[in-house]
Image (tube, rainbow, N blue to C red; front, side, top):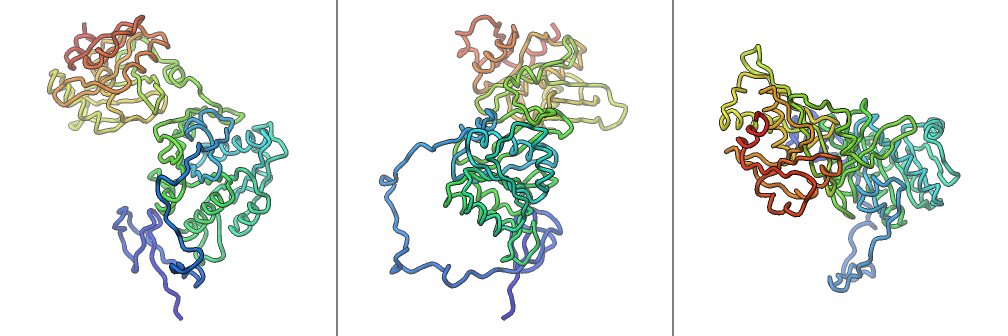
Length: 455
């Protein structure tokens, strides 16, 4: 009998009976590859109603709910992103650019868990045990409870986990795992899907927490089928420039907690260290009384973070001015500058504009609109904003400044770091009357902001 094969998109996992030049699901070109289809064995087919293993539905009220027992990773920022710690039996996917620190972070987690008396298994398909040992020596402080395995055979890894029954496992990386039952090569859609399915069954059946490392594509998403992210319990992304010191850990999916929390780390010679006060870290070293520099306060999850917004506006020598945005949406910059020109009469249409969120954070929340507008006005007019002032608010197309959420938390964070003035939307001031020790300046429109900056 002739073996049947299908074509899979290597970017999103879309399957088709024939080869296609462009994937209809994700729009990628030349990403389809042919892979054989594995038929399920006869004993794996669904059983009839008369079978002893037939599923029995349970009423919703009859399901017992218990608080998930969590294990501390020993890294407070990671526990925050996970929702309070590692849940036994969970499958966690960690993605990020090469060299960003995924393996370093998980090796530090393995060290902390092993030092707390928990059995750890670190499986690497990319590095030899000697390479892992050299990296572990740089981090230091490892105990005998951590076991290393350099293996790519999926069945061997599965048997090892069942035999040793560790409390947590690290798979580095999922793209290197290979199963003889799948005829395609390692890293293919079928192999990644099969490996993830095996680890998901192991995590649920054995009650072991499994971290799997996933490579990312040039678009910044985890390579392999999109179903990979649907199968796991938690998806974490490491963000930041590999050549910079900071790292941002963000949860984009979490079945056991919020997806709004972030963790901030700093890359040091001894590994990743937690940044317990990101606000002070992000605005440290800024030049005061410099035109185009404004401090704002953003909210990431439940955490307020102070940031410096920098703008450089200069007349262009070209017919079409250049606009550049680093750390925020490019279209947001164009909209704010169009509003400034239309509502305030600023002739920015013939100017180049460069906007930068210092510190490497990437933000798109509306609350930073007022700070961007203030930085542009300051740079264009040459008048600096007071170094003791903080700005936040959403800017509308008519030039109005709209209220934002968690204004009280933002003001208190600014006050904690020594700022004495806070420009906030007028609609938020009614909830800030009880705050003392910092001057609250209400802003109704961009004209109020312009008057404040230019005097």
